[in-house]
Amino acid sequence: RLQRQHPHALLCPLPAQGHVNPFLNLAVLLTSKGIAVTFICAEHRISPLRGDASLLANPLIRLLGLPERVTLGDIGIDQGFDGLIWGGEVADNMKDDFVEFVKLCHQNTAPDQNFGPPDCIIGDPFVYWTKTVASDLGLPLYTFFTSPAWALTAMIHIPILTSQGLIPLRSSAQPQLMSLPGLPSLWDTDFLHYMLDVVPAGIRRMVSNCAMVQSQSSRILLNTTYEIEAGNIDALEKEDPYKTNLKILTIGPLLSHELLDEDRAQLSVRSEYEISAARDCLEWLNTRSPASVLYVSFGSMHNPSEDEIIELAHGLEASTRAFLWVLRPPPSDTSQDASSWLSRVLPQGFQSRTHDRGFILPRWAPQILILSNPSVGGFWTHCGWNSILESICCGVPLIAYPQFAEQRHNCRMIVDQLKIAREIVKDEMKGFPERKAVERAVRSVMEGEEAQEIRRKVEEVRDTMRRAVKENGSSDRNVELIVKEIFNSFHQRLGATT
Ligand code: UDP
Image (cartoon, rainbow, N blue to C red):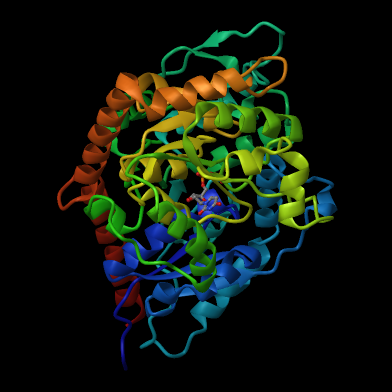
């Protein structure tokens, strides 16, 4: 009888772009070590991946899209941060299909295939039921938290702070300072969005998510680098808040290896969709001089309000710098095409006045291709952790403009600790910056001594991160450890069945 050659891991991220991307990079990395991966997510996240030639050519990766049993409309929410809550609801409803699929894997009667019964689950804390499924099936569980250790520290303390009556944090109108082990004192408003009282559903969800990290048997994988977060990680492991021998394994940055190996490498374009989206803006970038363009993008979920767009546009215009701005109509706005939406929301005459130095991309951007283009000299980001890692690895200085989730933590980390970003100061009342503040932030990152210092720091952090993923670096050693454990589990299971 033929035996399986490869262990089989099930990877199951929250259906949100910022979770799917690092999970996918982890999947590809594991297949390069001989582990077969079934990548499981809601169908709307899987279908774009079916056009990805490199995934299709990889015999050790299998994509599985599960039906979405709830829509945005079902739970009466719209976009932005709510999209994350929706992702959680969709994930909650994937459990039965997931279990059904695992049963089918066990019934696989052709053991020479790459995908036999699973040998481990790598789950997302936002898909917390993977913990129950893993223990029901007697499978090793790895919890992959896609944000840095700063955010993990905050999340892990939510049940404790809740039982102490300290959450929601924002009980008075006055901001309060708060500290947690390993973190500097932070204003309550800089903590995880979910810890404030704005979204009660968010707090409930985070308490559930913590079940994953309170487990005795699981290890926590982090998409970060030990050297840049050693203090937080050591403090959290030492505190071990639930006395579960908390073990944190840093395995980041999980990015395409071209980005990690070479300076500003020419990356392969992933799908047809990206090629068509990439062509016009990349051709435009190729005409610009090195490090002259500011890339502006607020990730997959944040849609600025119309008043905000006007201020940001005026600020960009006053900065006189070249820019590539990803500005899409919000998903709720289905009434008009993108260009008439832009003409309506941008200040009158803005597009013609900035025509010679501005490019507006009103759709999904090929972000990695943009950041790795030599003409990009700065990234104005909403502080999503993937965007930050991508920018660092391309050596691009940042302007920090946090919105929700763990983005305020990320902002503090890149501005105060790593000093690779300049924060854009918001007007407290409006919730977005005045045009003058935009202009100042853009100038300080794109020109002058401060800009040079930030660039030097980014390159330093980039080099540290690259060393971590090289052979025998801190992240590489942790990946090897996990791979070894998965192989051991596989051999034990094979032994038990032969
Ligand atoms: N992204 C992209 N094109 C876009 C917007 C986002 O390719 O137009 C990618 C980006 O490169 C990153 C991910 O989507 O890998 C967004 O994750 P991040 O953590 O930065 O922010 P989120 O969208 O989760 O808030």
